[in-house]
Length: 245
Image: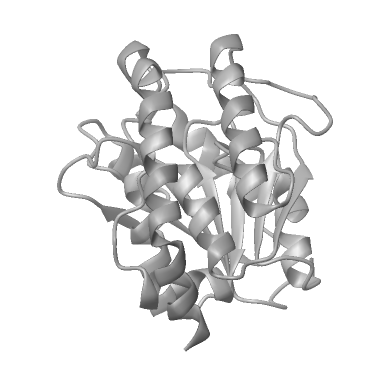
């Protein structure tokens, strides 16, 4: 990836990641090959935003927590659109993503191979593979989403993703509703005509804190996923009309 070839933004999403955010940002700064960084703070009650600001990283803070990390998605789409970024990457603030892996999800966009790239833990099965019961849920929804879009995906909940201006523009100009989960983000992008590609990446297990997928969220995950998939299918024709204008 050539320095300054494209205007690239890394959106680091975080909620109460005070103990992880510094190491995450240090990793990004050490491996910076020509992109900007912004932290999307999802209403943290700890010092997450302060740590980022002390490192001179721009921070956009939600006044309240949206309930889960997907509440940051529309924020970073609007920010990237307003600032005219050509490529946008989501990078989780919990320390699970590795900055050196960024070219894997960015290069397919630079080479016009895709509009939406997902970094998958499961293509080569290296690094942290998530927990057993969550992997079962991921496999089920990966199968459902793959059938709907007609293209195999394996890691539908991956937070390590990248988008080009096709996706940035669609969610900034046409789809003005909140994004509830990754199934919705994937399906709506596909309905809007996006070329979707998965690439193998390595992830780490978080060192501090707990995932948003605690026991209650884990129990609700399959029900919410099915509701969101149904909602996307009901919106398909409307999305097709929007993108044909």
